[in-house]
Length: 188
Image 1 (cartoon, helix red, strand yellow):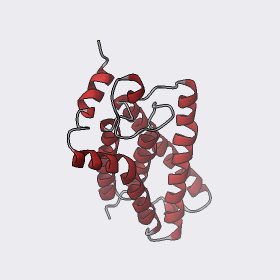
Image 2 (image 1 turned 90 degrees about the vertical axis):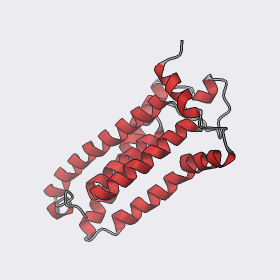
Image 3 (image 1 turned 90 degrees about the horizontal axis):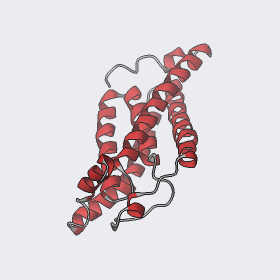
Image 4 (image 1 turned 135 degrees about the vertical axis):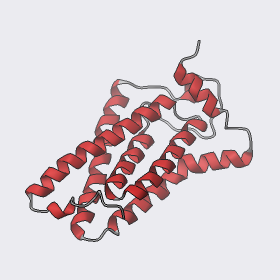
């Protein structure tokens, strides 16, 4: 009997190998969309008015990546190595990657990035959430991640972003830069 994780994976993976154009779209979305999202996030951050806000949100993004991907995900990969779907099931992925599957580094980084963008600009945050979710589902559809990898990676990324924001907010207020964190709630 298959687990819910396997059943959900197989349901999503059924998108692969149906049509060459859909396969190409899935590969683009899974492999290359993250670069566009990351570069556009940098543009959003560095086009913010005021150098203090730019420093705050750039610091926020860097620290989220370091904490979430560099520490938490690495620890989980070390202590809980997990095989990827194409290593467990008899499937042909659209591309292969190496390393532990759980949790997804991509989901961790990009859901963390999405949370940073939410703090910066809610409207853009919703767009990022949509695109990052599509990217995450594409990584399942191409056969390189389990749905649970994505869900846990997303949770780690978002919780890390919230924690880092709260710590940075306290730090920036202590060094007399409260205007760096003021007003993020305002729609832009």
